[in-house]
Length: 242
Image (cartoon, rainbow, N blue to C red; front, side, top):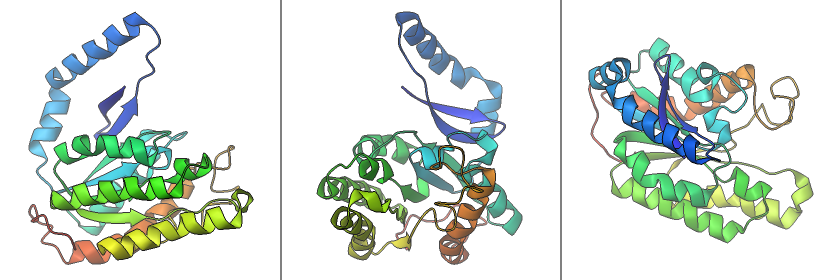
């Protein structure tokens, strides 16, 4: 089950394991109670900044780090410090694939994003799923977002060489092809400077640490800042693909 959570003013998607019937009742109760929480209402109602939704898997969700150490949370602070009036929403769900992401598009659009940073596909690749199917799913996600007037930034991913040269090459090329096809801004490799570094990753060697996410945020900003600088960010901007 996916819940919409706020912790210390930081918005993110969280998953709730449901194994027993009373867990389901508890989850429903929490979902009904959440709109009555004064903090949640005041934060959402008073913040009219245009929204950037970080749409991805565990690398976006921030698996293994505190909510305020994830890349969307750190991106929010960096944008604030740079004077960009945008609100960053963490829509990362651990374990998500491109197929799961496609099913979540309506929820993403309910947030009325000005811009979406799309980081999906790593779990498809690690599971050895069809690259053609992953490409089709991403294509549908991008198309739906663009048709809603949302700007899409695509985050590219790479796989370890043990998946075979043909598979890894076609997987990596998928992002470049989609960026070209839909004229998207592309982050060539989301984990550039972080992937493979024991100092910047947790013990699993896959998920970044707080410091690793700091590096990722700077990579994201290299692509994001020129786009945001062209927008009237002192007020909600119009929805146009840029």
